Every structure is written in C-alpha cells, then in structure tokens.
Length: 144
Image (cartoon, rainbow, N blue to C red):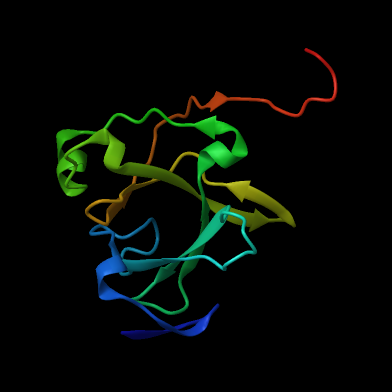
C-alpha cells in the first residue's frame, strides 16, 4: 500500500510490517498504525528511526534505542500491559525512546519509553512515575 508522508513523500508500505499502537501515543491517540522508517546509510546500522503514523501523514516521531545513548530500562509491566503487547516472551520487546528538540537542543522522553513487541508488531507507550536508568559512561577523557 502507498502512504503519503510529510517527511518522506509517498512511500510503499508492506502491510505485514505495520506497527499497531492500540492506545495511540500521548497526545496522538488517534494515530494507531505506524511504520518504522530509516534512511539507508552506507554500511552502517541505523541509529535513529522515524516512527511514521499511517493514520495522519503529519505525525512522525524520531526514536532511538536508549542503549545507543548509554542507558537502559528495567520496566515492570502490569498484566493488562503484557496482554496489550501480546507478550509471550520478554525477549520479544524492544524499548525505544522518542527524541525531541527544545530550544535548539536535542532531548529524550525518558519517562515515556515505547515498548514494541517485534514479533507481533504491537506497541505501547509506558508512562513511568519515575525513572531510574542505568547509565554507562564511555569515552571519558580522564579516569574517574
């Protein structure tokens, strides 16, 4: 199927690769179907992806694996959340965070990660009451 997007123009979408967010995302509850898009780079794996709404061509989010930023999540799911994700194994879940730009600086929505069941292609946005990320510092110029 072909979908018109604001960022990429008209793109061909395989219906078998559509991600379903049954509850939508914060502030965008009407957008429930998404496609993960990344621009091909010469031999390098993508770092950021675009999560493009298929319900509203003007809605797209830049997302990234939080481990690329040096932190990871341990998220506890309720039975309802695990059911909504159609979760059979924790290994099926990818955690991503939404990037945003504010006052010329890039930020990350750390309190509301996206949980995506990559096997079933179902996702949800989990709002955390507080975050306790595990931070790994690398490439330090001096020893700590």
